[in-house]
Length: 210
Image (cartoon, rainbow, N blue to C red; front, side, top):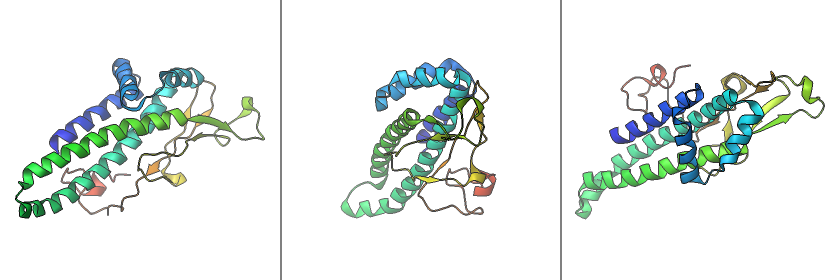
């Protein structure tokens, strides 16, 4: 799990840097999306021109980190379930620790692939959608929103309530893009329960902060 955590946190830091305008890992990230998910590089170039490079990087960050955090939390739950049931392998004359590492490695490879595939799918489906009654030149934040299609990632497709949505991002023409959160289908963690990330803190003092 420490190895898994290091890899995921490293990816998270790189995505954060991209969203903040540090382009050192941008080409690397695009290549990963191409290699792991068959991402069309022209999508990145076209959308970057449409809304501006700065805003596009922020959109990429919002979308990617949302997906990464949800899938990572689901992976932690899955690994806990494997650990709880791994003792039964001993009755079949198999070393529980070896079995745990073997199955954990396989699950983690699937996780990494799913992360890139889901991000690539979401970025490919982003579009700016205007209210039919409004002219493009007078559109404001109430008439422009971020949309996505169906994701084939296993992630819950529920939309977050408006109060939980991220702040609007403003493009080069003063238009607003709303990034809608995707919620996991997993059971909600109580605020006083231990955080699933393994930090040892209560959920409300870790990933459950407002």
